[in-house]
Image (tube, rainbow, N blue to C red):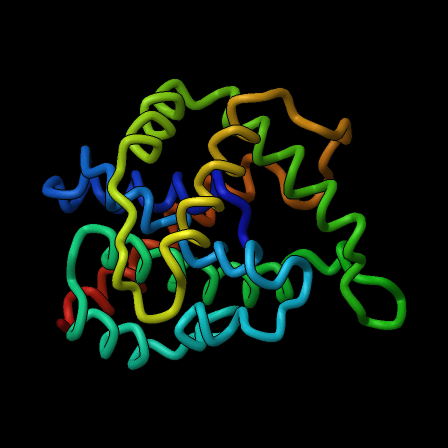
Length: 201
């Protein structure tokens, strides 16, 4: 999965072309919400693909279109942007960042975490508007009728993430693969698919 700064960078960049969402607290709240499944399941990822509209790691755009046909609030638009981001994120690092994988072909989970968390906080530190987005997310209203996540799960995930990203990075590591430059290139490249899918509703 992509980490929170990746999702916020993609959401903020996408909203530049959709200014009705640019200052929407609920839009950015939705853009981090699918990972609230971790409040329910912890590190068990058995429900993660379902919560991500079957887009956790592989693209199933019709599921996002169907979701947006049913729900198109700013929160739900952000939710769809998140899952479309993850659909692209996994396929891209599997293709381009083979250094994250062990000789047996399996992802090195510890290295993946270190690379992502330290780069995420490095991007936070060089992004002047991130504090404003955290304030918006903090002020957003939690939906009480989401079909996949409870209000408690969504709200608790917000509390954990906003607190974490207002504090220092918990790890020290010099990223070699998931670098800030890699992430920023991904952000720009991700917009084409998101715009194409959003344009179909």
